[in-house]
Length: 353
Image (cartoon, rainbow, N blue to C red; front, side, top):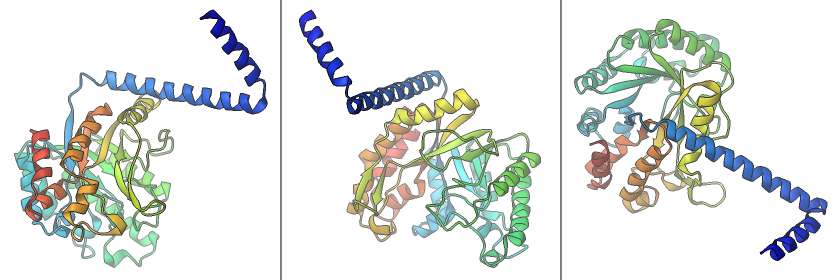
C-alpha cells in the first residue's frame, strides 16, 4: 500500500507542476469546498427545523378557476373540503376596482369568512404584481395613465385592503407584491425599488401586528440585501417546465431539495429571517405556450401526473421549510371535474388529510 501511495504522490507532484493542471485542481478544490459548505448549511437548517410542525397550504385565485371552466366558489369550497388549513389569496386591483373609484370586496370577503368557518389561515397578497398571468393586474382604466397618476390610486387601494382585512382573526401575513424584480415573465413594466419600499412601509404602518412576506425572484445563490427588509421571505420552486428556447422539450430542474434548505439556512444565519415555500409547482406546464384547456390529458401527464404530484409534496417537505404553499389547487379540481380524472385530487386528499 505504501509503495502505491508513494507512486501516486510522485505522479501527482509531477502533474500539479503544470500551470494548467494546477488551475484545474484549484477550480475543483474550490467547487468541492463550496458544495460541501452548502450541503453542511442545508443539513444544519433541516435538522434545526425537525421539531417544528409542517403547514401545507395552497394558493387560490378565483379568476384562474373561472379560466379553467370551473365555478370559483365551488372550487374554493372543494379545496376547503380537503382540510387545507392555509390559503394564499389575492387582492387583484383589476378585480376590486374594475370601475374607477368603486371598490368591490364581495369575493374576498366571502373567501375570508368561509376560511374562518373552516379554521383556515390566510396569507393575503397586495400590490400591483400578484400571482398568475399577466402578473401585474392593473385595471383597464389605469393602463394608459402615467405612473404619477396610477401609483397614488394603487396606494389608496392597498390602504383599503389592509384596513379591511387586518382585523380578521384568520389573517396570518400580508405578502407585498410577488416576485417583484422578475422581468422575464409577465406584462409588468415598472420595477422601481422605491415603489416596493413605499408599499412595504405603507402596509407596515397600517398594520404593524402582522408579518410581511416578500417573494424572491429566482433560485440564485444568495440572499435579499436591498430594501425593504421583509419579516419573512418566500421562494418559488418549479421542477418540471417546458423549455421553449433550446431543447423544446420538458426540462427537469436538477436542484436537490437540500439546495433550497441551503438557501433558507444561509438566510437564517445572516439575516435571521424565516423562509417559506411560497409557490411549489403542483400543476402541469403545457408545451409551446399552450393553455391548460387546450392541452390533452396525456400531454399534461408528461408534465405532472399523480406520481409526480406525490413526489412534489415529498420534495417540498425535504427542503426543511415548514410552511409550504402548493401552486395548482384549481388545476387538481379541473382534472377531476372537467377531465374526469381524480388522480391528482386523490393525492392531495391524502396529503392534506
